[in-house]
Image (cartoon, rainbow, N blue to C red):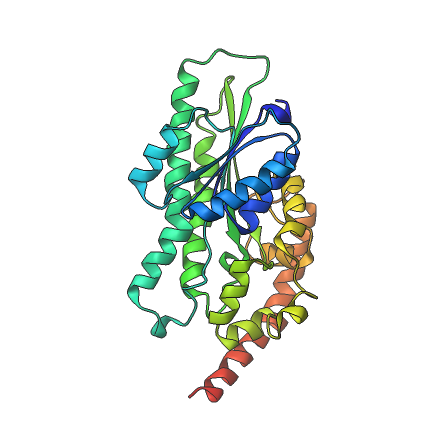
Length: 317
């Protein structure tokens, strides 16, 4: 399939990494539709994406909808004039759900699940059903068309840190969804279509949402993840979303289930928690990295974090 013929849906494409991924894809020639709740942000994002497109023949669309509500998802997606070739589930975040278990209200966990899990579950189910129905009457071609569902997850599902308890739980659920759906999707691959599921494990990067999270994040969490200090100091260690978006798109193209940017830190986090998920490439690098992580993480990283947690208890009796 030529890049200019690809249609991409991005759930959560009005800001942050979702918007930056959309800009990269538009620059490659894709038709892009972004979905989000905030119309004003969508309008701004659409203009930015249009400015990146390769050709004025590309179709760039912005749709206002709460994609964590099942009825809305099915209504909105079924109303689109074209089926996507690729679905990116990027919506999420935890700017208002940070804190420790005893300090959070039950509704906080429900809200975090809606933002980070159901906003992936419902769109992926709706799109997959549409693809399967579309395949029933489709003619066989020389090569099966590639259909991809890509979840944007987080290092928080791989290496949980106190302060992210609501977010980590939701992202663990999303990872389990991606892992299971990867195998389920093989049931539908045929001479007509080939189905692929991938999961992006995003590490800390700077966006407006990240800056908002910094205001609500416990000091312990900042110390554990290395985000203490002001923004100018944090910029020395963590990139902006527009820096990692091209790396992520390039790594998605490799076809591995697990996708990260090119920094060592997210790859190290992945190596601690590969479990039954497929390793990248031939598996050699991930195997070696997992062996390294199995020594370094428990002996140095985890012990250091546990000392920090005990020290935090003495600071905040």
